[in-house]
Amino acid sequence: MQLTPARAWLAAGPLLALMAAALLLPFGWRSLDLLRGCLGADSCALSELVADRFYIDAVLRTIVLSAASTVLGLVLGLGAALHLIAQPRWEKPVAVLAGMGANFAGVPLALALTLLLGSQGALTTLARSWGLLQGWDLASDAGLLLAFTCFQVPLAIVLLMAPVRLLDPALAEAAATLGARPATFWRRVGLPMLVPSLVEAASLLFANAAAAYATPFALAGTASPVLAVRIAAAVSGDIFAQPELATALSLVMAVLLLTVIVGGRLLAARLRRSA
Image (tube, rainbow, N blue to C red; front, side, top):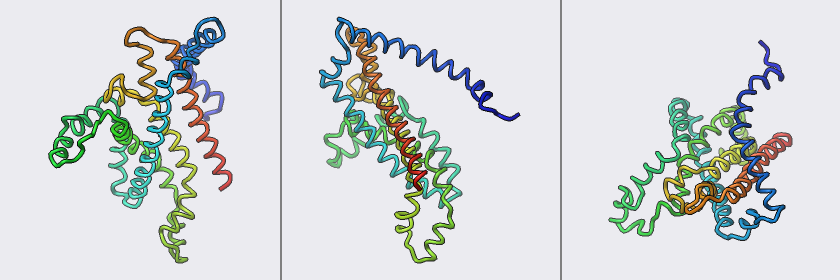
């Protein structure tokens, strides 16, 4: 049976209906309430968000942590993907492990890191006996960056193995025949061909890190400086809930993620057309 566009939309109908009921309708309803509050006589949560440096700092630190973990994930993931293509016998088992590692976030990852690198962790205790890691704190920005990198690198490997596999080995052989060194080939041919895929992978990695909640919450609790934890704290509230503020923060996150993902897709498409 040929899959026509009409049949494709029909097949996707149940999933789209579920997304609309579970995500879009509640989000739209809360957004309209927020807009009515800002246009009416009530206090505007958006004004409170802009005026409170605490939430602006959470947005900025989320962007910095996400960008840093994205760069680390791309560099380490691309290197691993290139090595796996050169060593085909390891490709399948490492791909399976990378798929598992990409989903090994949240409480399991936080527990593993706490046992190894927490204040009383095995590696932390050993390092401090040698005079190292005296000021180390797993709940700090450096600790969060390490935790983010732990699930960003496997995801980068999964995302980049297919584009790297599509590189024609004949190109490298032709460059070597003409006297080009491997570094020259990658600088002038290999990496430019991979740039669109790297841009798309970077946008997905950034969104994956920016929306992470379970891992930073398990490591630092409500004191975690990332935006997702601040949204959850505003929903539950230490003393009382602040649904309008949570909606405003959710709008900021939605705009941030949509900008990165859509911008990445458009930039990658433009790079492919100009290649």
